[in-house]
Image 1: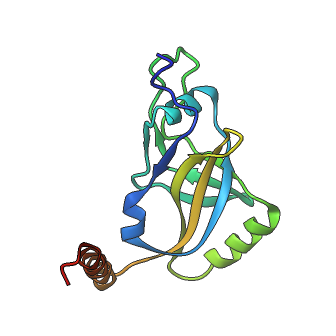
Image 2 (image 1 turned 180 degrees about the vertical axis):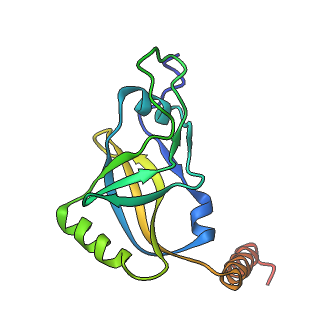
Length: 152
């Protein structure tokens, strides 16, 4: 059982880069229970529809699905509960003021382990892309791939 759990992990929200344009990125701690961190170390995280919101001047992540730990007992966690993010007061105030702008949101980009083994979440202040922006992103990616290959 212990061979499935790795101490370091780096799980990315690959869809976020396609759907959003990142304006600023922050690294935040996350409050987790014991079975949640074990599931994350197994890589059982789904970012689909996850976003961050302010509740009483604190930042929470909502709709982040962490699968129940297979070896967990009745102490297992709820997969979709709101989880508190830990940022400095200055960063929280800055994010709250920027969220008042129209069309901006805070989304999780990746979950990773720090040097000390703690779970961290990289969040981004993001603006949703329009359809033509998404097409432009695809075009730029294809041009870069062709240039790397030497097919230009």
